[in-house]
Length: 409
Image (cartoon, rainbow, N blue to C red; front, side, top):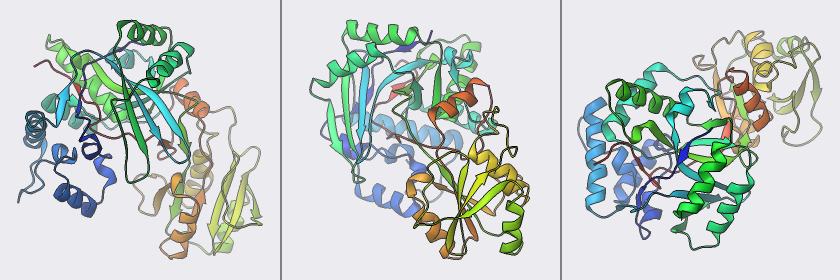
């Protein structure tokens, strides 16, 4: 029931791919961005930041036109090439602790609209509209949506077969992550992959909710105008759900607004509060939250009756903390908008919580156990939404490795 299709990717030539591929632009500081743009003429950041040297930065459609022009310049200069035959692309990342292996494919917008590609995050209408206009003007997807699917033996067989051949490229980035890409272009192998996904009832978005929503919005808009084309699919990286690596997302609070002994007393309404008898605390079980305050760690174990174990959202540790501490005690109602709260990705480690609180910028930090793929699926299956900043999911994908064109030229 899930429709995936091979496509003719635009991608960097083998000899420059390591210079072209970039992290998501939001992960760079202004200083890092300027350094990359100044010292690397091949980086894909030049495409998505085409006006970096302009005295007045362009916005909206004007900027998107410049992105398109820079993309076409990269093609004219031979930095990008387009494959002659439609292919699936096997992409692998290897870090010091994990190996991520999956298929880059064109995925049907209709499956998204019909609820066979399930979501677990809210999207903002304004951002959807902005990205829709961006896609309509630039005409390409450069960073795949991350989707997870139940592991499949037929897909694994094709993956193993492809990995016995020479990769189209292999390189290692400065963060010591190795990247590999293979083409899967035989009609027989492509048919096996399409058939395997065609037997799946549903798959799940792990990361990229706004990208998929804006792709669907664009497809609806253009279809209503009587148009047809490759925009009825979007580019995705499909990875087995047991391969996804989900970190917790920790919370830092700047101001408790009350004496610490009063705060600790109020916590006892819903938690068993215990001293941590060790060095840095690291979450290792559900419903036990680490709390760093006054230079030491405590554990908060949720009491029976303090949450609903049958509710897939209410039973998440992030929601337990939000309801019973941040809201109930500290009156923090909107995590996204309240300036007292900051978030720390779990891959930074709980030592980063200690450092932040010890700097006196924050009064307390909370360490949360990672959500499992099953919990994420339970939320999506119930058509519910995860609390803000509940997951930090790997792999983090690079932009510009494979590009999916939305319109024929």
